[in-house]
Amino acid sequence: MTSYKRVLLKLSGEVLAGSLESGLDFEAIRSICEEIAQVAQEGIEIAVVVGGGNILRGKDAAKEGIERSQADYMGMLTTVINALSLQDTLEKLGIPTRVQTAVEMRQIAEPFIRRRALRHIEKGRIVIFAAGTGSPYFSTDTAAALRAAEIGADCLLKATKVDGIYNKDPFKNEDAILLHRLTYMEALQSQLSIMDAAAFSLCMENKIPMAVINILSRGNLARFLLQGEEIGTIVSSDKE
Image (cartoon, rainbow, N blue to C red; front, top):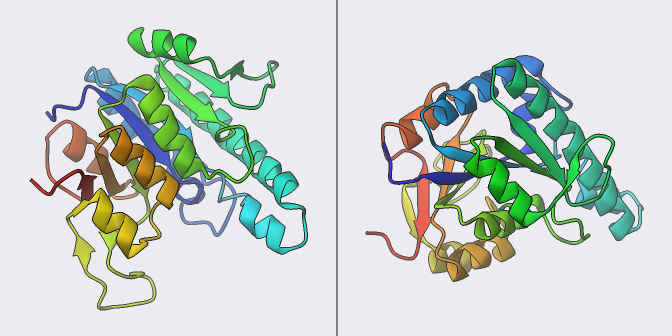
C-alpha cells in the first residue's frame, strides 16, 4: 500500500461519459465507483472533485456567445449532476457519501463547509465536492487543488482517460511519449494541458504530489493506491 492516507480524487467529466460522446455512461460510472469503493474499504480516506465536461464546459459555452461568468455557472451546475450520479452509485455499493456544493442548493446537497467535510472524511464517508470553487473563471482542476489543500490530502490523483501526462497530445500524435515523473516547474514551463497553471501552482505551493492515471483501465486505482505501483505520471517537487 502507498503512504497516501487521504486522497483527493479528481474525476474529469469525460470519464463519466465512458464510451459515449457525451452525457452519462452508467456502466462506466458503476465501474469507476466499484474501484473507489474497493480502495475506500481498505481504509484510504477519499474525497472527490468532479468535472462537468461530459455535459457542458463553461469555456465552450462562452465561445458560443454566452457571457463567460454565466457560462461558467452553467458548467458548475453540470458537475452537480455528475456528483449526484456518483453518490447514488457509491451508496448502492454500501459506501456512505456526502455531496457538498460550492453553490448552495440545500434540497440536494450540503453547502461546502471545510470543517464539516473533514468530519465526514474522518468518519469514513466519501465527500464529493461539486460546483467547482463557486466562482467563475476557475476550472474544476483548480477546485481540486484547492480542496486537496483544504482537507490536507496527501495526494491529488487526477483520474482521466489517458495513461498519464505526455509530451504532446497522444490522440493526435502517435509518437507522443508518456512522462513518468515531472517536477511542478517542468509541468508549468512546458504548459502541459493535463492541468491548468493555477492547479499546478497550488499543489506546488502546498507540497501536494499529483498523480495522473487512466481510471478507465480496470484496476488502476487499486494498483496505485493499494499496491503502490508507479503507474501513470507523478508530479512533485522533485523527481526522486
